[in-house]
Image 1: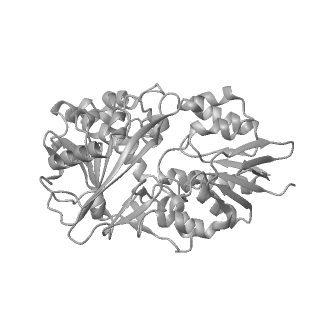
Image 2: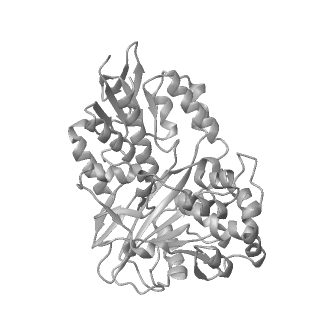
Length: 452
């Protein structure tokens, strides 16, 4: 039995969590990261009393693996749960914010949906389930609930998660729990009620679906993970890493050096995979390379004295139909502690996405004017100059799960089967959220630990 030694490509949350569990199991590993920064897209910054993120702003305690990660870290890093106001989500319609309905009664009384679709909502539990596994989200929602539900509930929801287009997103791959509600129970409403009544395991009962960060910002999570696994096990500034398959194992080439490993775990985006694994025939990568990514610019904007609207919510989402230039606004200083000076506010706004990618490429002066104008209209901050304006453009921000997803998943499985010891992780499969990445990392590490 050959000794296990694992190369992990990428020091983001997926790579760090994989390494964390390998270390707990006593398996040797080394992480190779192309940048000078540990944590991938997770990066917390501080300026003039504001604490803001340049990548993900929060996560969701959406699975047991995420909760158990914090437990396994022996309280060295604890999740900071968002303020109770985070349960409230706002949707922009016309010239005003409205709370997103949280139940049937509020769904019937809200001005967000048409009267026709409110009556349709009453019949949703009795409609036949869909038969097309590649049905897009927009078609699914119109079929079951109506156009206004698509425009003012699902579309902004998808903008908030995927920065995507419901006409492209396929629920089977992008929102599997929603898809399974209809397939397993026949409806969204009836399925949600029945599923809530089902008996849960001890692990399932841990899942709260609360919004979380960590005190001081998400970079503390990746920083603590890096300290636990050992900074000496992380090689930074490895810009042109590639691997070679030998008769017995794999060889990683980096910085004019090379080392042998029994397993290779990749956490990088799709376009870097062919050069990382040149021994895999190029034709096998094509379904993976077809993956599309949303381009998004994230803007942190802070006010030392807040004079705008009340920030008693998670934030606000702006439906594409409203033809505004923002995807949405997060009320970060209301969600988490010490994100802005006392009496001030920190907002995070997003521009671009799949349907407005050109906005993500705006120069700083144009971006400033756009965001300031939009916040004057939507947040009531007219004639007020912000005290903080920082932005980060992510050209491959969020993977989009459309009809090509099944072919991509099959190609990934086939490559892993043909080249035993190769693990292809990251957002190319298994979802895009932080909880998805943690769960995936846990499973990859467990598979390496348990299998010869």
